[in-house]
Image 1: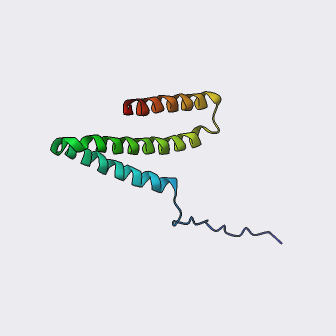
Image 2: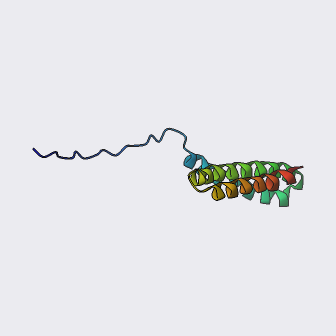
Image 3: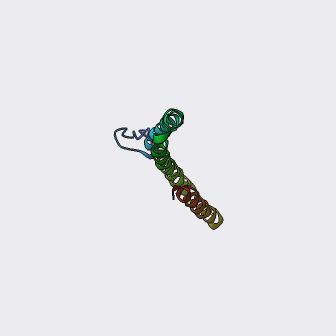
Length: 102
């Protein structure tokens, strides 16, 4: 008798869990909204522009963190030069984002 292959069922992912893609999307939308509000408040109420700049910096850090996680997933199995480039980029981003806050 010949062995017949049974059709494989597709694995369905649960949409109820928090995924990095979902977090990235909502952070991206919130970042756009915060930057728009920051631009408006900078013109209308200059006193609140500083607080909005801090919130925008936090959003920027979250976006870079998400991009960093995805970049690490990409370079994880690559040659050491890619990993070194990733680490260098992380250090530059950390200095570029944190230094202006002080």
